[in-house]
Length: 305
Image 1 (cartoon, rainbow, N blue to C red):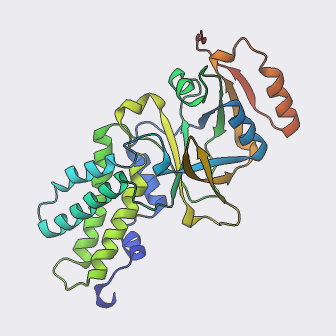
Image 2 (image 1 turned 135 degrees about the vertical axis):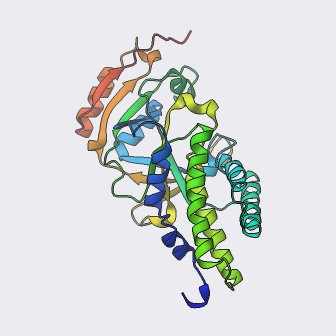
Image 3 (image 1 turned 90 degrees about the vertical axis):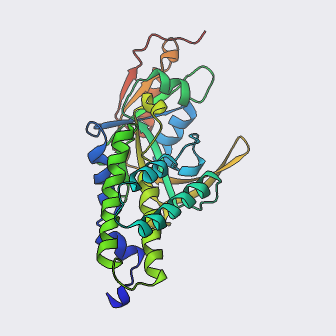
C-alpha cells in the first residue's frame, strides 16, 4: 500500500468490520437467539399509519428518549483500553478520540447519519404498554413482524440490545482487537502520515457509533428491546423518504422505510382496551388493506382506573 496510507474504507475492510460483520459480532454476544417475531408498540394512530402506508419510521439515534444513548460504549472503551499496555502512544491516541466523541455526543455536536427503529421481543409487556402506547390510559397495540426477512432488502444491523456490562465489554474487546491488528500491520514501526492515523480514527468513530446504539443501561432491560439500524448514506434516497417531524417543540429527523405487508403477523390489543369494541375496526382494516394477521387480546389483567 503506497506510503502505508489507509482510508477509512481500507481500515474497515482489513479489520473485517463491515456493517454485516458488526451485526454478527453484536449478535454473537447478545444473550439468546434473535426472536422470530419482533413487536412494535404504538398508538391507534400509529397502527393505522404503519399498516396503511406500509412504512416504518427510523429515528436518528440522538433524538431518542434515553439520555445515555450511544454513550455507554465510550465508557466501556476507556475501560477496555487499559488492557492494551504494549503500545501506550497509540492507546493514548485512541483514548483521546474516544473521549472527544463522547463529549461531542453528550453536547449534541454530532451530525450523524445513523437511524434506528425499536421493537421488543415481548408481545405483551405491561412496561411497554405504559411507556409506548402514547396516551395516559396506556391504550394501544403491538404489531408483530416476521423478523426473518423484514429488512432483507436493506443494509441494516438487527440485534437484541445488550444490557449486561460483561457482554458489552466482550463486544468492545472483539472490535478493539481488530483495530489494533490494523495498528500492528500498518502503523507500528513504520513511517506513517497523519492521514493514516486519521483514517484509523475515523474508522474507530464509525464502528463504535454502529455498535454503541445496541448498548443500554440495565434499567431498560425490562423492554427486551430489539433494534434495527441503518445509515442514511447506505440507502437509495429515491426510495427512502427523509423527513423531520415536530414533537413537543423538538424537531426530530427520521427515515420512512417501506416494508412488505406480508411481514405483519399479528396485532396485540392492550389490556386497557379489553372491554371496548376494538375487534370490528381491526377486522375492517384487515379487509380494506387485504392483509392477514392474527388479532390477539392482551392476557395482562390490568385496567386503567
